Image (cartoon, rainbow, N blue to C red):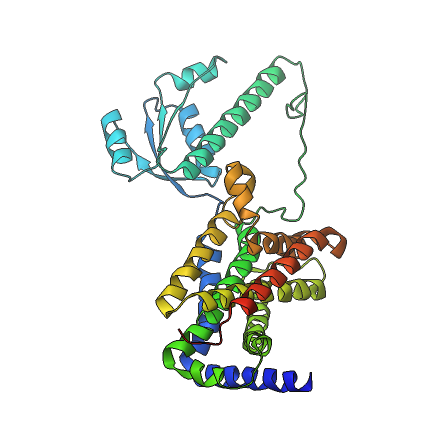
Length: 381
């Protein structure tokens, strides 16, 4: 056993020296995660605002101007200016200069003053579904609000009600938990941590044995009496340290730059993150034992990375995916780690809430590590 430990320490020391001799690789290890965190954290934003909007006011009355002011006050629409014909509005939308066109018809003010229903047409560019849905919902909410306001004013004039605002007969009072401001960063940034902690360890370890095989140093290792398990474990330990440092780094960036608080136990988060990093290292190591060249290792790593980003729930809800893709996502370790991240960081989840995800990750790590040891061949082909 003591001999095994000596072999393990020797292999781990060799891997550390290899890392330290490549300063560019060290910079990329910490530069790429921070760059990904900043770019994705700021770029991915589902809180749509500032939709470019043009108004065709055919009424030129007071009610039309009040409607335009109410439209602008929502903060969702940015008025780029007025157009003076239907053709000009269609041209502006077709060219992409505006995404929403508002047409206030003639007689709008007259109908409002008479207390009769008045219509406003919203032309919405549906080529971007996210923006179109936001514009549609905001427009409908504004129309409902103005209608209730007008109804209250008419009842007040008739002396039916007092100056109290008109309220619906059934009032829904939503209470948003864990992310009351619905900030996109609070949803995406914890998920980004999972993606980053999978990308770097997988790619680092995927090249571990392949690089030695191509450079010829593997042949020297094979003639030594080092056990397979000591070689595998010795190669994992330095990259586990790198993954742990990256975890602390991205958690610090998350709190300082995006102000995402950690509501749960930091110790629980670190322990379960270490389990995930070990699983990611095992994936990379298994790839390195299968691939014969570094390009092959890179292609196999991408084969794991793309489903991890698209199917894990990082960008799209898994519940909205077809059943076969939901089943495939259950084979991805990052799917369970995202539940752990969002649970501990956003919801303050405890161990009793996350033990099943941790159990699956632990089983995956054992299976992948065992497969790596068995697949590792001490002979050159």
